[in-house]
Image 1: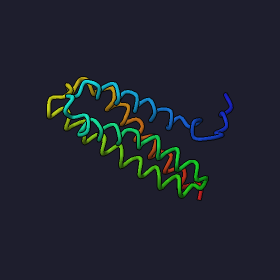
Image 2 (image 1 turned 135 degrees about the vertical axis):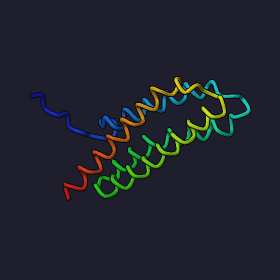
Image 3 (image 1 turned 60 degrees about the horizontal axis):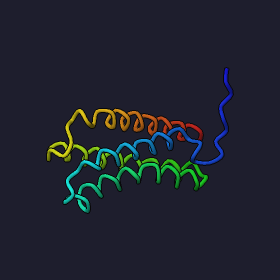
Length: 125
């Protein structure tokens, strides 16, 4: 059995690393959005995506399980915003549904990880 690597800070959290990768993918996808959406939907989508790892980092830095749990719920809300905004981008024809398949799957995996961590934090107290 391989020993777990200790978590020294939020950068060591797999959940934060996956959230950062999701942000990178969102930035790539939104580069193809129309120029006139730069301050509209493009900005909104990017902001929602960036909010996910940001809230994970902030919650972990608070160093209290209740705070981390609270910020994980906020990150889940940002994921829901992101999902809604990406769906809108498909409906508006800014991106093909196939172009979002990987992001959608990654977001679902991240959502499951967050719920798992929330459940674990509940059982430790």
